[in-house]
Length: 70
Image 1 (cartoon, rainbow, N blue to C red):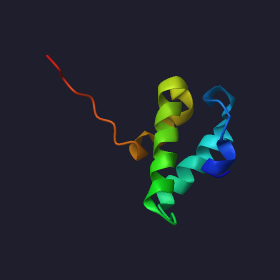
Image 2: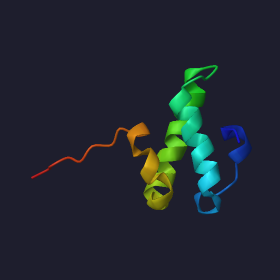
Image 3: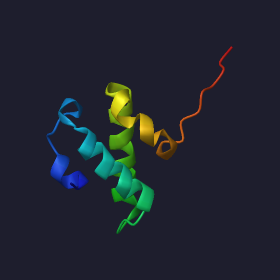
Image 4: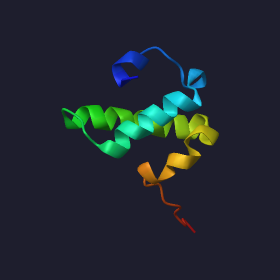
């Protein structure tokens, strides 16, 4: 499933398989242009905030770090 195919689909409708396909594309990093990769990254990030259980195995792709703001 490509990012263009996901237009209109809510994050709530994503399945484990959808997220696995998204993560595979990001892991392979074989995009025709940088914007397609960036769109996938933003999509994975949105899923991570709304459905973290689906993204847990792929957090390394997001490069999220905990920050101490104290």
